[in-house]
Every structure is written in C-alpha cells, then in structure tokens.
Length: 221
Image (cartoon, rainbow, N blue to C red; front, side):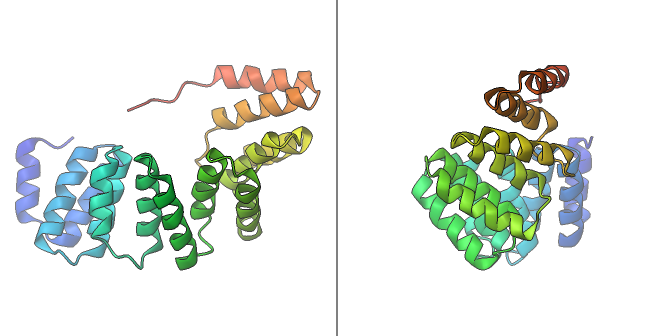
C-alpha cells in the first residue's frame, strides 16, 4: 500500500502513461482512492488523455460514486462504446432508467458485438418487466458468444421468469460449467436451486442448495 508521501512523489515525477499504469495497478489491488488520485493527475496533465478519462469514470463507478462517474465519463471519448456503456450503468445507478436505456442503445449501435453491453442492457430490461426484449437481446449475444457465462446466467433468469423451469435449469448448468469470473458460482447455484425445484427435481435442487450454502458470502465494500 502506498503512503501519502509515496503517492505525492509518484504524482510529481510520473508521466501520463506512467500515472495511468499505476492507476491500473492500484485498481487491481483494490486501492481505489489511490487510483483516483493518479487518474485525476493524469487528466489534469493531459485533458485529451482518453484512457485516463475513461478509467477515472470507471474507477468512480466501481466506488459506487455514480454522479461523479457520469460527470467524468461525459468528458471522455463519446465514440468509445465502453464510455457509453458505463454512462448507461451510472445513469442506471442513479435511477435514471430512460436515460440508461438510451445510452445502452447507443453503446450497442457503436459496438454490437460487445456482449457486456447485451448483458447489462438485458438486466435493466428485465428489471423493467420487459423480459421478452431482454431475452431477445441475450439470444443475440449468445450468437456471438455461445459459452458466455454471464449471457447463459441471464438467459436462465429470463427462462425462469416465463416458466420454462427445466430449460432455465439446463441453461444454468451450462453457465456453471462455463469459464469466466462473473456471475459468481454462488449466484448461479441460487438460480439452479430455484429452477430445479420448480422443474420438479428436488434432489438436484438440494444438491445446488447445499453447494450454495457452502460458498462464502461476497464481501460488500
């Protein structure tokens, strides 16, 4: 962990690429405030530094500071699908759902093969009760990445919503077997517990429930 003196020295001596690199390292280490300081210095040194502006907004989003994240991202490259995606996520975090929908649509228009956009947008549509639209979006994403863990999990949720319990369970099993950091095994096991129980297979449901309960609760910052 960097001390205040070390950070001040690094800020004074580092170039913009070095500041961005150190910010990435700090974010990986979970030291978000230090990352924010590096990125603010990078942006101050070079207001045109696109990667620094995006990372600053991303960093603030990860800190759940959605209002400041939106301000930072609004000054980033608006042709970058990642920027538009995180503007959508920030707007959603602020409860501005119509604005979030517009940003998600813009992000898809900019990069229709980015499945992270498909998943995030589908999650909002499902939350708004538009399950059919969410599922159609996920189906397009699955055409791009058939083994996408997050896509399969979200598809399973939609299938569960509309009563296709066995298919939801089978899709959840595919998500569990797929590679990827998110969603967590705990989240998928919970989906599988519900889906198999509703599909009339209490044995499989119990197996997933036991696995779910054995997994640690996620840390909340």
